[in-house]
Image (tube, rainbow, N blue to C red; front, side):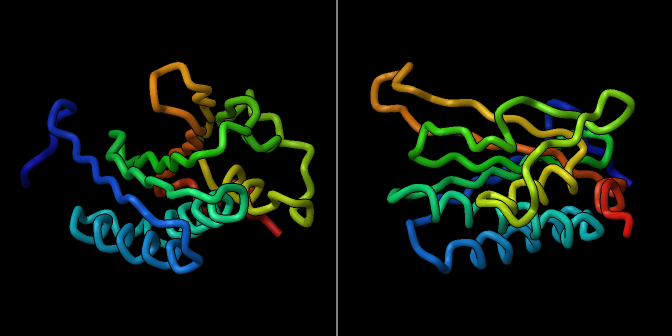
Length: 158
């Protein structure tokens, strides 16, 4: 069986219009990519994550969004979404990682942006970058997270 070396990791990006159907397009595309790379076991949690990211972008901006899916090694994938608003949601104001240093957020699932709290529960790590015209013509924000086969069960206990 062939392996993928770190320098040959795959990456896909998808530019989405400001349209309520964009979350569905992102989910379908993501599932196809994961199944093509024999990572279908990540599809359910990854679809939830990308759907929440794209929906947040649609609700908080008037412009397009770009989704990037990247193989991150050790069975993990990184999902990131860029949009035109530089405002970082409270749930992503500081980076996080699961494990002994994990600190749950203070946002309630029912609050505005609750979907991003769900992303944090499903992800192993997450973060954000605000792009405030640091480069000519580039502005907005990037939200990202990493998921792995272990991610779906983290934080989801009844």
